[in-house]
Image (cartoon, rainbow, N blue to C red; front, top):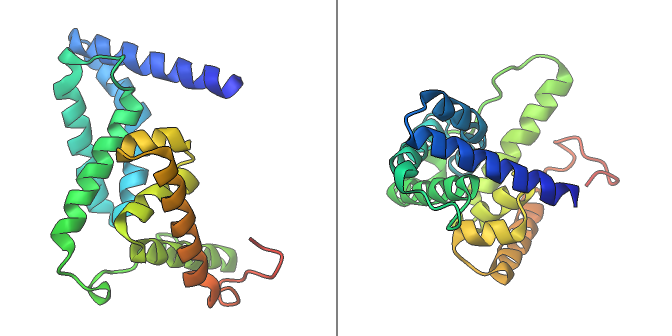
Length: 197
């Protein structure tokens, strides 16, 4: 019940900020950007594996939201869900443009703060997960990132990806199974024992 109330409050707050922006309130745009941009960037980064591209996608998604502000119909879509959907579509477009690249040409994301052994281990785990995510088919990657990393519910993901809930369940299950198989040979190197999931 609390999650539903929190979700409704967040949706209403986003809608109010968007309406204020449409009425000329620049501060509302900054507040809404502060709420939506980090989630949009995180999703784009997980799907694309490139910080600069993720920033570009985030900026483009926010620009599209600002262009829609005057005609926004809150009953049609929630701003956060709409942003995720635009980000997903922009990522898909960028991935299609990259199709000619091979995996050898794509740099693995680097750990920005090497140092202590635990941080190095965490960086290796992050890099291995990111590389494994990039090897998934694009739709499975989108579903896995939205469900297991962003923590969205299946109905929200279905709306974002424009598929049914059953398709989301299938995509996430197949993606999770493929990730598990892909990373299985690296368990020891990544410091996972038998009890670690």
